[in-house]
Length: 131
Image (cartoon, rainbow, N blue to C red):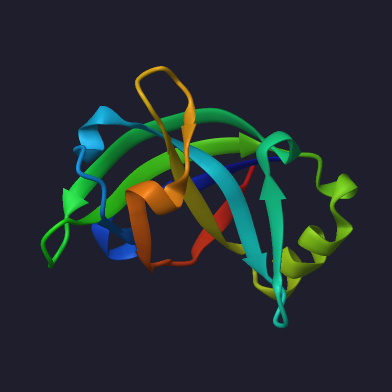
């Protein structure tokens, strides 16, 4: 299954509080997880569960508070929905509404522990647009 994720508008994007001494621009963002609320808990796709076909228009816009950033981007992703029946069920319950977890790589393309860089401030659900 292929799908489009649109967090390109600041009003519909996730917000983080940056706690690292290094600027956010020193790190490369990537999609680390796709989450869907099934009403009782989140069903999650991590790492090898999905493939990012494109990750475009990333911007870390200034938020309302100091060191707060609004993470805007668009992405195309692909995964085999039949391998994840609980995720599929959660999508059906939520009209394809998901949340996306963004993480960061350092300049050597190594994963950096999110807790060293930022604290989540708000996660905004968005429609997983299947095509």
